Length: 138
Image 1 (cartoon, one colour):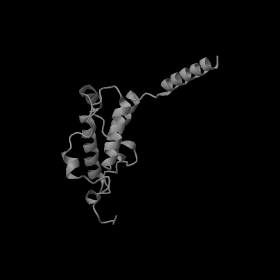
Image 2: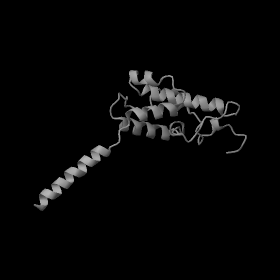
Image 3: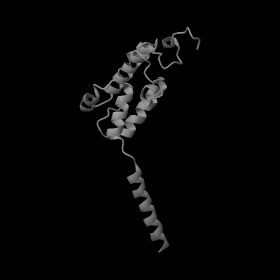
Image 4: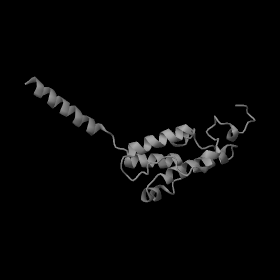
């Protein structure tokens, strides 16, 4: 991208906002209510990636310093991603993250509170398979 081109006008830039982006109040049909976090997260990842905004939640695009040219547009995009996230959260969950400043902070907070590793489930399935295997050997 040429140095003098505004990243907000480049469709390949994370700072680009289409009319569709600006008019979309919801990105995903799933409203996260505290259950099935992995389903909600996957839906959000797909939707954000399709709009080239995943970088606002995965930490790959940090907030520019206040004195840099992209600071205002970064804040605008971050706020849009936050609004998309908030509209996909059940009201009590939405209120619990309302005062976090970045989409990344909200993402990490939700992951910390609601992400559950499937390790115990995997162990249980492996144990059942082992039991079946032993029963077949008898």
